[in-house]
Length: 58
Image (cartoon, rainbow, N blue to C red; front, side, top):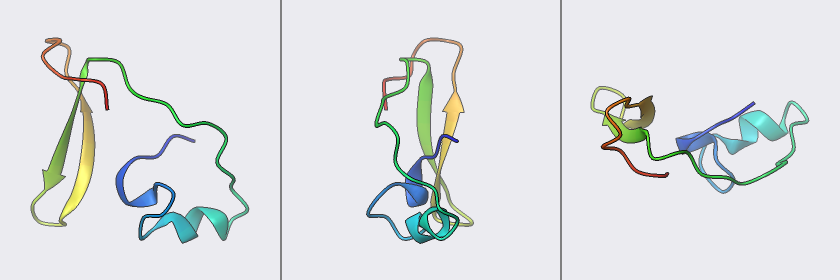
């Protein structure tokens, strides 16, 4: 499983993963084809693939 935002280690929802026995396997970054947005109605992040190549590694 790959997570970003609030489910990352030391973030508010990480407990939901550890409660189910999940463990951090590897930290990594995305390719340069991604953008990170904040969803205004929920105030949480969203990771979106951007085929234009104008994004950055996250």
